Amino acid sequence: MKKVLSLFLMGTFALALTGCVEIDDTPYEVDCTEFPSHVDCLEDIDPDDPDGPGLINVLDALPTEEINITFWHVYGAGKNELLNELIDEFEVLYPNINVSDVSQGNYTDIRSNTISAITAGTTPTLVVGYPDHVAGYLKGNAVIPLDDFVKHETFGVDLDDFFESFVAENSQYPGGYMYSFPYSKSTEMMVYNKDIFAANGITVPTDGSITWAMLDTWADTLVDPNWDPESPTANKCEYLINFDSAGNYFINNVRMWQGGYTNAAGDILVNNANTKAMLEYVQDRFEDHTFSIPLAWGDSYGSANFIAQDVCMSVGSTAGINYNIPSDGAFEVGVVPVPQYDMDHKSAVQQGPNIAIMSDSTDAERLAAWLLIKFLTNTENTAAWSMDTGYLPVRQSGYDSQDFQDFLAISDNTNYLYYYSLAIQAAYMQNSYFDYDPAFAGAYTSSDARDQAGIAIEALFGGNSVQDIIDDMLVQLGAS
Image (cartoon, rainbow, N blue to C red; front, side):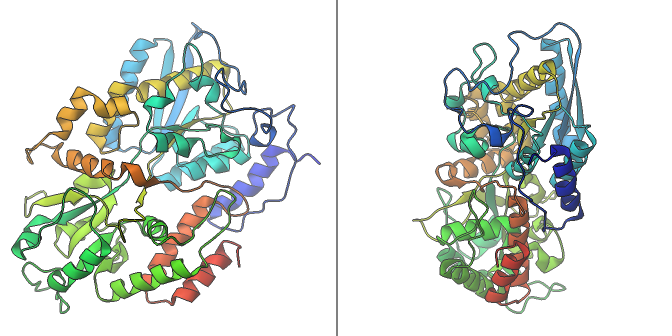
């Protein structure tokens, strides 16, 4: 029996907005004559058709009348300044397109606000978000596939110029269609206090990843077991290394330990020997102060404590590199790839949002939105966005451009771009082993799974038993 999609959205998203993970996912049938581009209606269409799958109508030319589009994003004053400059340039190229860009706060805010807009029928034209956000919107037919734009003779783009893992992340949805497009991609890197390491005669390799075994050894020298925050020991730290994102930490560690997390079907795979062994190892390292998370200081990030020299090293997003640099030059900061458990199963989290076009839009608005996406991600602009924000270029041609290569060669640490340059260099050492999370939206979503992964690490830091943590995660995600 057909179930009206708006009612499905209201029931599902109302629960999502409350933060409850037990979302009703009663099976429903979609009327494919009414919603031909819904994911459940595309099984017999080839996403690899070189002429495009024919899922949506793409105009052959941009209409001449005025077109107004709205772009929701998460960027604050600094990044938004560059974004507004790019939008101004875009509007010069297309004088009849007016772009209204609105920051929605953080990623939780933009997901909640978009869900509310979907249920109210007041969505923007295009929105920034993670794949798990898009997977949720997709259940209600709220986003459109972009394949016909990508392959269009006039307005298309060459996906071969985009980094393969970024394209794969945006093509992971059912049927293999691109319901989002790579935009502000990032990963994690590690900063370290070069002065403390030098004072203790330790050289940190800068040509690749270090191992957890090296961290264990360094902790014996660098961690003060009798740390007094009122009278800190010179050239020592309370903890060796902080990991900003507890969720990323769980997921990345599971991959390095060949354990289990989730899959595209939404199965929760954490109840296995390797995942438990990883958690037990990490808990031991929490207890001896080798590893830490921001919860140690009652904060959301460890950057302030890294600057205060409470912790010698810290892992965080490339886009947040400058939060880890002491404004008074108290010590020199080094930047390297994320530590790996071993060199045989390396993993670096692929993160950062993509862009999707919402279904509640006209053909003219969709084309205008696509032209904006294409403009923001062209060779010149993806390089400029990266150099100014710490995100990664999404195109190889952007990375290879002369301006970007000059940026990577910056050696003056008084140049405000210097640390962005170091972060990007560390990021691209990890390019061959970027991993992204499977995105799914059912009774429990991939966003719920990530939240529970972070909660699990915080519970581990708090001293809870590994089995209790696993059991609670399974219960919360309906997998017990």
